[in-house]
Image (cartoon, rainbow, N blue to C red; front, side, top):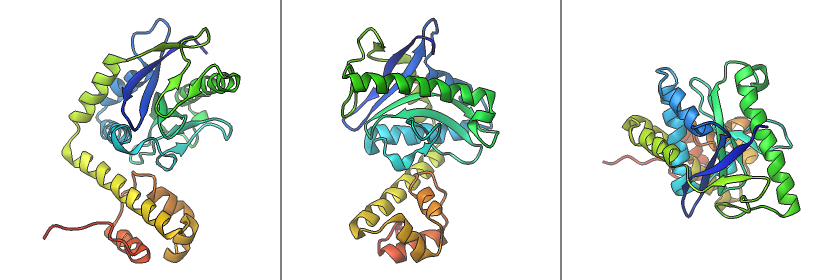
Length: 251
């Protein structure tokens, strides 16, 4: 893996968002991902959805495991935010509920990422970084805290406190996202959170909910992912089983 700097993009009480920048390059990997897909008419709506989800995570939700799709291998922490329409993937290292390192990504046109020459490179980069971070964690030279990574300023890692241009671009694109996409993302996230909260209160597993509804556990897992496009019929069935109104209409 080429020498890279870990840079902070956004910090809140809920979460810390980071990215990487390779030596000799002016743009971070997250910045590259935003720039190339914002210019693509087909993929721009997917990009806007992904960034809206990420902004809600940073501001309110944190990087909850249920909001990510595992990628890479079982032994690593590579993940992606699942946005379905055109299968745009942004690959990340989810280190905890409060710390995320964002890499690069692209449109998934093959069955698996390792069948794509473009995507496999992004995933391998994060896998190598993950291995380095795990080794440093075991040695005690770095530590994953609530919303940050301590100990990055050492001979093995380079750290820059703030990727100003990357944050500016991230906020610009999310601010300019059409209201209909913002509402779609926010409603999907709010509904998935309401379902998750209801399951915990009832001490009901995803498998049990699936059995009550006559559907698969995979479907329930998808509902909790925060980007599912629910039908009214599905919402009514879930509400009836959980005994919780998932939506309300102003009269």
